[in-house]
Image (cartoon, rainbow, N blue to C red; front, top):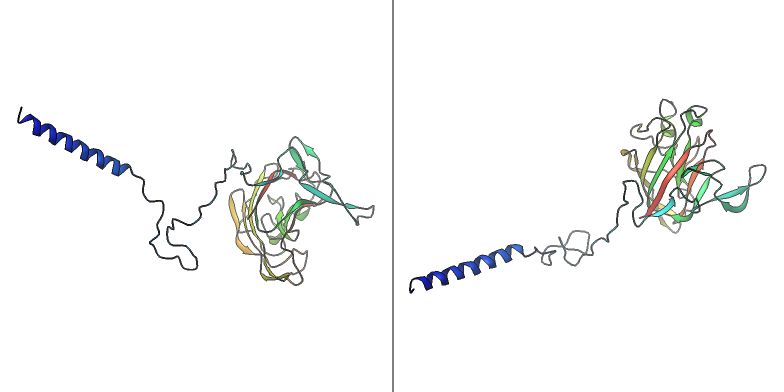
Length: 274
């Protein structure tokens, strides 16, 4: 009995030690530090425990679906986020704003009836947009499956049926129209949906004047075709451009109707201001 008692005490001590070790191993590691050096150019230390953490944004249930903080422009049910400018019989703008004239067919928006603009204004933003041209669209080059998205109503990212349809390089899908061709031709054949994911960085201004140009990063069908490419100025046709004049902080996004037959189709359009 005298020998058994020390053995039991030793076992109890060992058990407590093992339990303490297990609890120590379960203890969560530090979520940050306060004794590390400051990151150059910032007010924050390396792994700073006090640095604000990004808010949670829930992705869409499917890869192309709008995330929780996106502004939905078209989800297949309504074009109310878009508007147009009335024109008279001669094609001149009257100054009157009218509802989007584009028709919805089976959840798809038909780009026919003139250009349309977002009701909201945007500067730097992320845009997701899906479009499709018909296989039997009439014409060739710039007259086949042509549309475009104009950031701040000025800077065009081209949309065009570029599958077996030769045209000038700076007018191809994913190109900054009239300025910079896409890195590659990443379109699918006509009749299939093309997917645009674009990061647009608005120009920096001082008293309305541009002091740093706009930039664009563009993915076509998941393939990078513009990598933080400088935009030289507002889009022009058959002419060079620059940033002379005054510019706004924000402006609507315009989607172009190039009057193709049959019209280009549009779906699943959303924007995240940045």
